[in-house]
Image 1 (cartoon, rainbow over the protein chains, first blue to last red):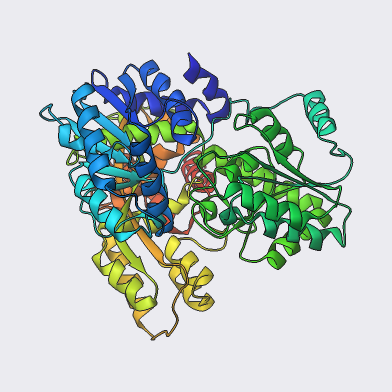
Image 2 (tube, rainbow over the protein chains, first blue to last red; image 1 turned 30 degrees about the horizontal axis):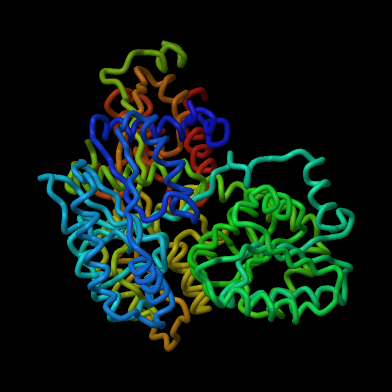
Length: 406
Length: 220
C-alpha cells in the first residue's frame, strides 16, 4: 500500500488516525472536479490524493471540465482578477463562463455523495447538483482576500450555494460568506522526485552540469520570473551579501505560457545580474523536479523573497530538505517560516541580505533552523495531513451537527 | 495489599481512549486593534477560544517558546505591546476553569488600559471543528493507564486531559475522574493532576512527562 510508505515518515499513530477518520466515510462516493489533468499544483495534488482516498476504501473519482480557448481566457482573467484585484475582463466573460458550466454540467456525471470542486473554473457546476443529500465543497487554491469586486460578486453567487468551502490560509478568509470556511494549507509529497533524498553523486552531477561550484556557498530561489517573486530584489540581496562572502546565486524558474510578462521580467533580471558569472539564472522546463531538488538541498540559504504570494510551497520544499529559508512576509509564507525557528521573514532587500549573511556566518544556527523546519513541515505540510484534512472536511460537511463526543 | 497489587487491581470500569483532530475554520472575524480584539474575543465561539489558547500545546501549532497562546503572539509581534503580551500569555486555565473563564480573563486583561496602536497584519480569528475517533485501546487497571499515557498518541492525552474539561463537557480531566471512581486510595494523585495548567504548555511531550511524573507517585 502506498499509504504504508508514508508511515515511516509520519509515524504509525498519524497513519492510524487517517484510517480511523476514513472509516467514517466508508461506502460513500467522492468526486473531485478541476480544469486540467496535468500541470500546476491542483492536478499534482489530485494525482496523489485520489489514489490515496481509494486506497482508504472511499470510492473516489476525478473529472476534468472541458472548454474552448475563449472559456480558458475568461477563467485565466478570473484568476488574475481574483488574486491581484485588477486586470482586464474579456467581453462577454460571464456569458462564456455560464455557457461552459452548462455544457460540463450536462455532460459530467456529478451524482456523488461528496463533490469537491477545485478553484473558480468549474465553480458554476453547483447549479447542476441533482443528487438529494449530496454535499458540495468548493476548494479554493488561490488568494481571494482582495478580489476584483465584479468578478468576486459573480463568483460569490455560486459559492454561497455550496455546503462549505476550503481556503489555504486564514488570511484568505472571507467575511461576506455564510458557509463554513475550512482552513487547509496545501502540502508537499515527501516521496516525490522533487522532495525525496537523492544520492550525492546526482547532486554533484547536476551542480556540475550547470557550472555551480559545490565547494562555495549557494543561495537559491525557485520561482517564476514574476515581479511578485521579486527576482531583481533577489539579485540585489545577493550583491549585498557578495561584498562579504564569496557566494553563488541560483535562480531557477520555468517559462509560463500564460504569463506574458514573464519574458519582460526575465530580461529585467538578466540586466540586474550583469555579467557576474556566479549568478545562474536558469529557465528550465516545468517538470524539472530533480534540478529543483538538487538546488534546494545544495543551498546554504534558500530565499523566497516574494512581495505577494499564494501559499509559496517552495518554502516547505526547502524546509523539508533541512534548509533555512528567508521569505517575504506575505500570503502563506508566514505559516511556514516561524521567525528565528525555521527561518526569517523579511520585507526589504536589506533585511534579506542581513539574514542571509547572518546564516552564512552562523552555520550552526542555519542547521538548527533547518532541523526545526523539517519537523515543522512533517507536522503541518505533508500530503498525509492534507489527506486527513480533506477527509475531515468531507465528514464535517456531511454531518455538520454530529455529536463531537461520539 | 502492595502497591503493585493495587495498581493491577481490575478497575470497576475500563478507561476507553479516544483522540481528536481539530479542523481549523475561519471565524469571519479580524482585529487590527486591541479594541477589535476584545470585540472578537467576545463574539467568537468557545471552540475559537480553545483553538487560540489551548491548541498551541500541540507541536503542530507553532508559537514561540516564550508565549503560550496565539493572542499573546499577535500582541507582541504585531502591536509590539510586550508587557501586555506576557500577561495574556500567562492567564490561568487550571481546573475547573473553562474557555468561558479564559474568555472573561482575557477581556479583563485587555480592557484594563486603552491602547492606541493598529497592526499592519490583522489577527484572524479561527474556530475549529473537532473530529473525535476511538483508538480502540483501553486500560483495565491503573498500571495499564500509566502504560497507555506513556505511549499513546498525544492527541488522546489532549482530548481526555484538556479538551473535554475546558469545553465544559466534564467537570475535571478524565484521568482524575477515572482514578477517583476506581482507585480512591490515589485521590491525592488525582488532585495533583487537576492542578496542572495545560495553557502553559507549548510542548506536547513536556505535558505528557509531567503527567507521568505525578502518576509515578503511586510507587512512593
